Image (cartoon, rainbow, N blue to C red):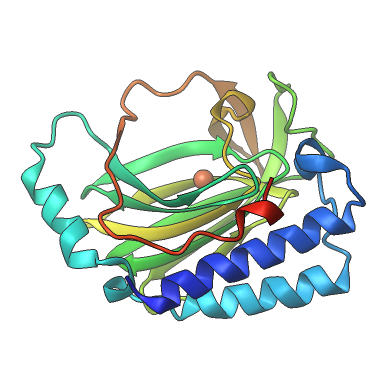
Length: 238
Ligand SMILES: [Fe+2]
């Protein structure tokens, strides 16, 4: 597979290992802490380098045509998206979502996590929400809270969208009549039991966010990533 993809995995490992080291051996659990480590200049430098590498990834680098073939072979039946993991480990994951036409990944949280989203095909609208007051997203249930909204319309020409431990909720919508494909990097990895789904209600000047169960209309199928990639040095990721 593309050496760009191998390089991306290497850079992602380097970036988030630096974050882990900046936490001074807090361990993986500590990585889910809000805003942990991002003030460290080495982490910021590495994160910027990683963003540039993500921005450079094109559909051909991840075998886009093969992934779209999968999509066409599967009969769509109440499926929102296909998911494939390029690399998955406790420190980070690099994966791809293929979003069907006119579908969306509903509003969900990423407690204490960094995320980078790069569109490789089609167009998506990302609506992200940042709480006005401090919210500990790691709690299993959350009170209603107010947040400000940011809307980004992204295509393959767009720079990556970012989530940080503070800017932590988003929904991803494909409003178009064609599929949309995006690369997603998350660190630490997504732990579904720690995350929650939300519903927004517009109030004057803010959006009120309430926790809801996972919408029954949201259904993702996992498919194997059809190419080999070079994994990061496992001794450093234990
Ligand atoms: Fe997400």
